[in-house]
Amino acid sequence: KFYNSKLTFHQTTKPSGTMIRFYPYTAFLFLFLSTTVSALSSSFSLPAFQRACAIQTSECLDASRLHFQILFVDDDNTQARIASCLLSRVAEYNDALCILFPFSSTISSSPNAPLDAAAPSTALQMCHSLGLCETTCGEMGTSFHLSYFDEYDLIVAMNEDIRSAIFRSMTLEHQEHYGPKCRLLSEFLSPTFCGINSKTKKDTEENPYDVMLHTLDYELREKVAPLADYLTDRSSNVFTTNEVEAALILASAGLTRFCLDTIDAQFDAAFQVLLENNFKKKDVEISWEKAEEQLVRCNASVMGYFSPAQRKRRFDCYMEEIRGLLQGGEEG
Image 1 (tube, rainbow, N blue to C red):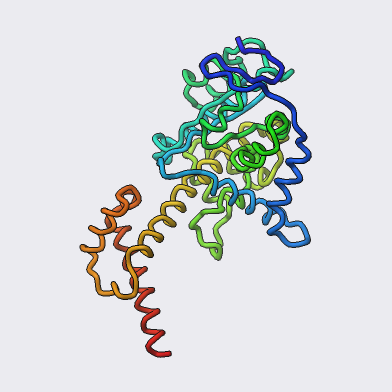
Image 2: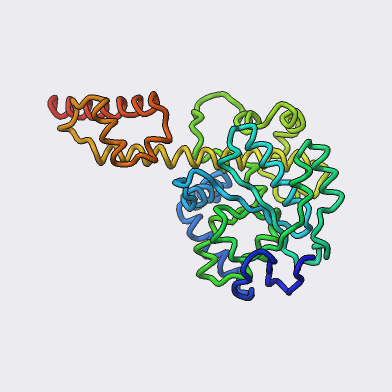
């Protein structure tokens, strides 16, 4: 059974850590929103706010380990385990089973939480209807603990009340530090949020949902496609409606796209820094073979992320930029 310990959120297989205390959540909201909205215009813009939040979260993630551990948190021992199994299926379709590792937990002291940690029949039924792994879905539930912020890369709350309960139990200092890595699942229904690091050209006529929908296999895509426009930028209330199944699927696609794009973006930036640190204007005539050998010695992990063709293409583009700068200087 779950521990039912007044928001202490203990788990049998994890160290208990410190007791949970309530702190002024409103103060954190003011702090978090002020730092996020300060970059926006005086008139509020939802897309701009979503982009600012997405940038904060993507920057707090560390892609150097080549994987993310993602924890879904609910208060009913149901939705988080379904979301976790869905993310596994979407990750498998995108060859990311060794990149995205989903887990689930429950705020066991919530009034909505069952006393029994066994998987509820409603969760098992939905997992069966979606073709998810029933073994994983049927595992015993675990109880959420604040120490998980240091153990997982991303904490995904199933609704606003759950995230509020988590933040209220943290000090203001911890709220500021850990806030960006605790997101609402509904935020990943937004193409603006999920596509913050997308390489898709902004000037294409492609529907913004297409990238998210193409993250899904055919069976899941068929379930979601008719409702894609309706589900855009919806609040967490959508997970309590008749469209909960489609919303969970689309949010899983958005989360997958966000994580994979974040890893790509961080390694792209790391490779660019590697080029800038190793090659200046005086090195404009260096051969690719010598350059590659030097780059591998400097950072084999960054080089290993890209295929030989991708490395050479990035190197050639960088050297073209240097030649352009040299040519511009001579003409000036």
